[in-house]
Length: 137
Image (cartoon, rainbow, N blue to C red; front, top):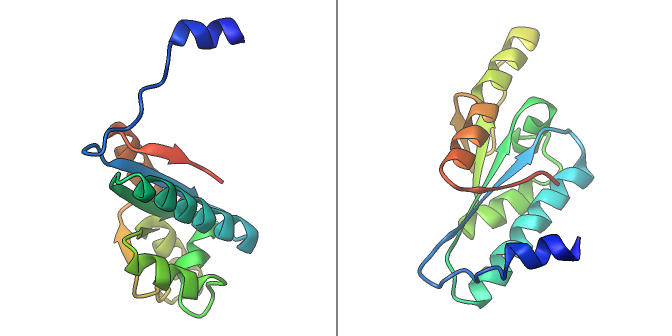
């Protein structure tokens, strides 16, 4: 293992001009997992901002994880609101919303901080193809 690390050479630090972009994946209706995603976002933001490095963070929800962004259901609504003010973006999957509407007859009402994307999975693919780091807590 040490040989592999030695062959890879030193890891270059992120330059102050280069923004760090992170996509965080939430697909479980689990308050602990949702809080872990928010903690990850907060910790990464704090770390890089202390170094003067700009940070972009997008939390992408789909499937059961969409409950993170549904008004009246989200166990982390107050944290979503606070972190949105700090610049974290929250994306909700339109495919999941359509499935909920088909099942229940009602379109889910999202938190004001949520933006709708056509597909959560496709959004994660697009962000990774654009060079964003991927985290799944």
